[in-house]
Image (cartoon, rainbow, N blue to C red; front, side, top):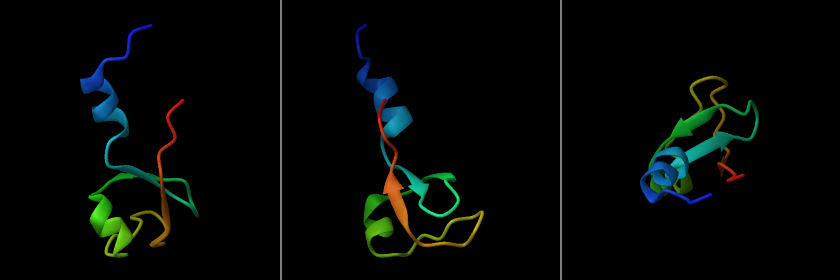
Length: 53
């Protein structure tokens, strides 16, 4: 199956998952590294990138 670059970017680029409650958020990676983004569900501050399956 061919991978479409535009669709892959839309689904996985700048998408992070909260390590506490597993909520997905779109945010700038620089803001994630500087801890400027908080989870809107649990107010946590630790995120990981969304895994590509």
